Image (cartoon, rainbow, N blue to C red):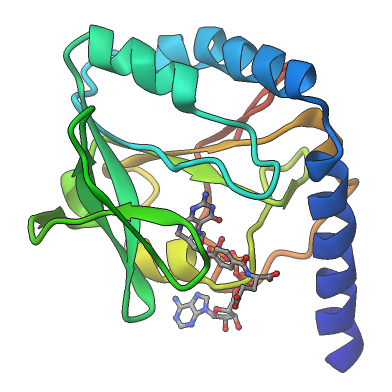
Length: 189
Ligand SMILES: Nc1nc2c(c(=O)[nH]1)N(C=O)[C@@H](CNc1ccc(C(=O)N[C@@H](CCC(=O)O)C(=O)O)cc1)CN2
Ligand SMILES: Nc1ncnc2c1ncn2[C@@H]1O[C@H](COP(=O)(O)OP(=O)(O)OP(=O)(O)O)[C@@H](O)[C@H]1O
């Protein structure tokens, strides 16, 4: 048990380091490539949660600009107890930092995960079966623990190609994603 936990931690460290080493140019190109790949999943979608890039994560900022141009509603995760709620994100948003140093909108109006149509998740590692390794807080897993795969929201993970590993152990609490998108591939789960 301890060694399984250790190997997850080791893997997190390696993969986080790899994505932090991407150059600014590589990050920008990757951010553009995922916009093209996600557009086919936006039909009938109005309320979308994104994230603010942190620690070398692939950035949804160009996707966000595209969504705003389409008049769609965007949200960001806010850590509340051990779950996530989602705060509206507009060009006028004002900010505070959470305990991880990630900015969160200041607001008292939140949506619950099940009120969204699409949630775009950051991840640390993934495999070709659609398995996801996150930062280790279990926040997305707890937030969507009761969700049935067929019901909203659609869960799509974003990652750099360097975050792919051969196979990740699936934990019984891992929430299944519907797709993982990288600059070079779309994995449908
Ligand atoms: N961009 C982004 N936003 C997100 C997430 C994420 O993974 N990425 N989250 C996904 O759930 C939630 C925050 N979860 C996080 C969990 C751990 C760490 C982290 O950096 N841990 C440090 C120790 C930080 C500390 O305690 O000071 C570390 O492991 O080095 C960051 C975010 C909500 N917002
Ligand atoms: N539905 C749940 N109920 C209670 N605890 C949970 C649940 N989901 C995950 N956890 C706990 O959260 C911890 C971290 O889980 P895990 O390593 O899978 O996080 P992660 O997916 O990497 O993080 P995140 O979802 O925040 O990106 C685990 O110790 C697990 O026990």
